[in-house]
Length: 148
Image (cartoon, rainbow, N blue to C red; front, side, top):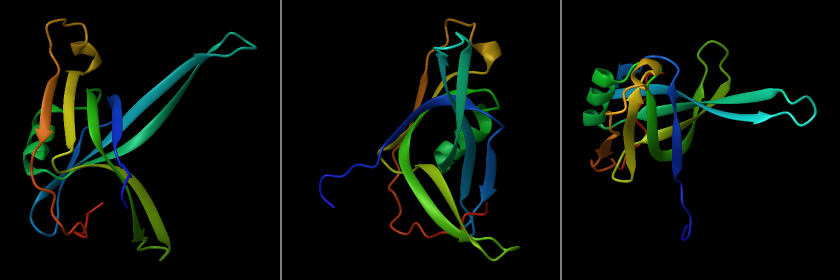
């Protein structure tokens, strides 16, 4: 379809240490749980409110998976650019169709940037953001089994 764009930009904090799994083709994949928050003041009560959204981030590039495994931990702040993807799978116990919506980091138009790590690291002003570009070619077959 001409004139369409699938691009997601998020800045948030990891809610857990990254999960690294092996796919059936032998390559590694990283799965991140990213929290983004929005805060506002309630007009009626003046009370501060906050809403947190959780996003599934899946990193397919082997080089980025190694960096994620080595440097990212729970609480790290990251900027991600990727594509949103919803996949359908069958629940083995109930036999029902299930759906997962994820942000995919793969190919030339995706990136992941570390923004300073955990809360403890935020107080260090000399830390510069570290961009990590995924410059690999996106495989034409995205039907690999994802083990989660």
